[in-house]
Image (cartoon, rainbow, N blue to C red; front, side):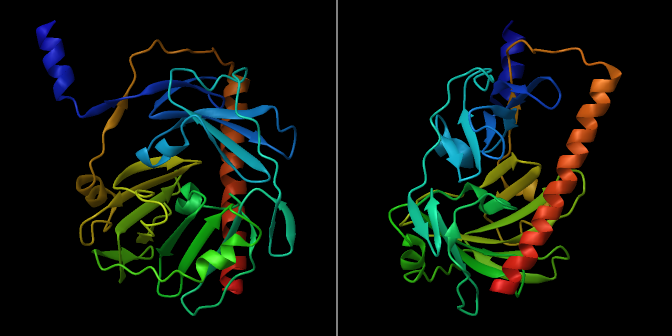
Length: 300
């Protein structure tokens, strides 16, 4: 028993939770559990459940990350994401953002040239690492010489985003980071990041600078995954050179679950269906991401 305890203490892991995983129809192990609802069908029905990792999601525990169309609710106890569990009521949007009414929150971005994109309702549509932004926060993301944008998200009043972003400058020389998939360019910020999406190994690199006065600790060093994306944030020069370098730079611990695994036997046809659904979701999300990136580049 003593030997077991010593080994357990030496393992670089973090106690985590077991969650329902709707894709595999079994359980998964992560830092937190999530449940997904969609306004496209019935906003009271849980459409998807699973695990996620990353301390950047801690502020959402017991809450839901929502826009007008999608809602992700997070919790941190074993199997708390049951489809039959009680979840916070979906907010009713009352804000005007640009020309759009009935928004839950407002978002806008400003390009390096200073031009503002059209203000709109806060949305998860084709979001990557910026998806964890909380209301009343502004963050600069730079992934290339030409893709250097400042985002603001708020819910304090009509068109609050355009008022908020005017006061932002957001520059930081804390770390030097590599940019683009090739990593041939550099930028400066609070954090370096590297991300990849599912198994496509589509690597993205860049800098993140957060307005700590508005929302302190919004981004922090470490690993996170959500919606097929994996991220590593680190705080040393060029620590985002590649995935292995970033892993060594950030303090990453594997989640460790001690609860009994729930497994539902899947027939060959169900396994095939689950795999097809996963691949289909990957394709759709990729297309959405590419389309949104093109549109936002044209705007700003």
